[in-house]
Length: 302
Ligand SMILES: [Zn+2]
Ligand SMILES: [Zn+2]
Image (cartoon, rainbow, N blue to C red; front, side):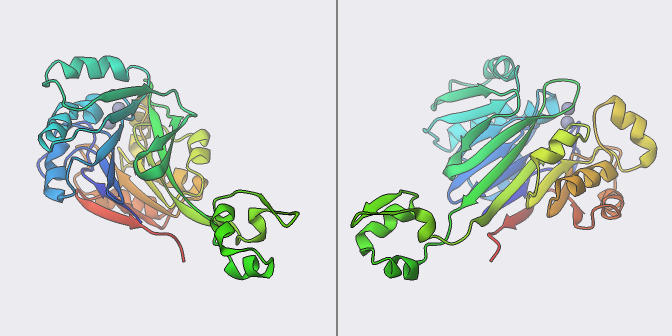
C-alpha cells in the first residue's frame, strides 16, 4: 500500500488555511516528498508521519512556491536525527538553487546528493519504488514525476509440483531465474501466473497539458495535477503562464487513462475549489479537489 498526503493545495503563495502544493508519499517506513514550498514542514509536522525516514525530495521546478521551503524541511530532518543520505532530484538549475539556499541553513548532519534530470530518466526511490521524470511545459525547466510499484507474478506451487521440482529450487524460479533440472530447462513462466498490475501515480504541476504528459501518466491509479484556474475565461492566462484550467487537467487525466484525478495548486483567487472539482467532473468523473492534509491510500487491485 502507498499512502499519499496532500500537504497543501495552493499555488503561488501560502494562504491562511492553504499551504503550498507539496505531496508526501509513504511506502512502508520510507518517505518521498514532491516539492517543498514555503512552510511545507508545518502541515507535515501535524501529520505525524515523522521526518527522519525521508529519503528523497523530487522538485518539479525552481519557482519559489515549489522550493522556498527547502531550508525548513532540511532543518526538520536534521532535528529529527536523520543520518542517512538525502537525494534531491530536480531539473537543470537545481544544484544552483540548492547551493544558494544551503547558505542559510547549518551544515547538515547527513549527506545530500543532487541529481539534475532533463526528463525521460528513471531513478530509484525509497523502499524500492521506481521513479521516472518527464519534461513539462512551464516556460522554465520543469519536470513531471511518476512512481511505480511493480507487483511480482504469483508463484503457482501446483505447477512446480507437476514439473517434479524440489521445493529448494522454487524461490530461484520465483525470482526470475531460468534453471536446468534433470537435464530439462525450466523457465519462470512455467511456474508463475500472468503479469499483475502494480500501483502507480503521477505528480504533474506547473505545466500546460501535453500529449507527452498523457503518455507519461498512462494508466496511473492516481494523477495529482495542477488546476491553477477554474474558469474557462482564464484560458488566456493559463496559456500565458503555462498553467492549466481544471477542465484541462481533467482532459489530461482522461487522455492518460488515469483511474483518479486530484486537483491541486489552486490560484489564490480560487476561494472554493469545489468549482474546479465540478468543472473537472464534467470531463473526468473520478475527479476531486485536494484539501490540505487529505490522505489517499493506493492498494493492489485484488
Ligand atoms: Zn507553482
Ligand atoms: Zn511555476
